[in-house]
Length: 143
Image (tube, rainbow, N blue to C red; front, side):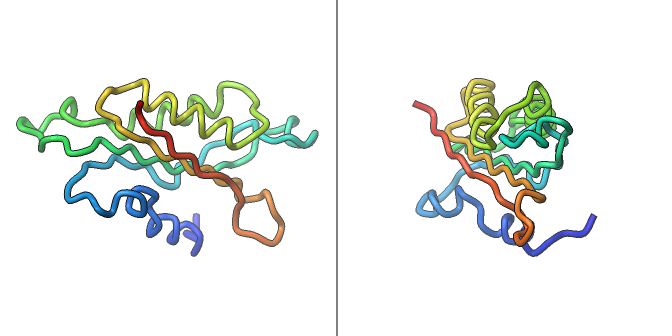
């Protein structure tokens, strides 16, 4: 699969880099470019078959200490993040990418108390004929 200019720009334009650039230290877990087949959309043809969506997730863990024992339990497993995002995307048909993004952010905030904020960007690559993708980005913070 070829990497588009759009995908490269998504990596460069981290949400947390923009909204928290004033902080000196933070730990962020991310999954970028997760391609998932999902039943999503408001149009009748979108109810008939799945389509590809691209999901980017960033979890802000704040200023957590460095791992002492070099163990996975000392951080948030990004494989768990990817697996749950895919599971949520495939649970049932949703009409709006905003709904799917909100469900993923809510899962992340509920899954681990260390997660201070979560940003989810979902793109539908085939949504618009003259664009690389269309979609939404949602940021939710604890509290």
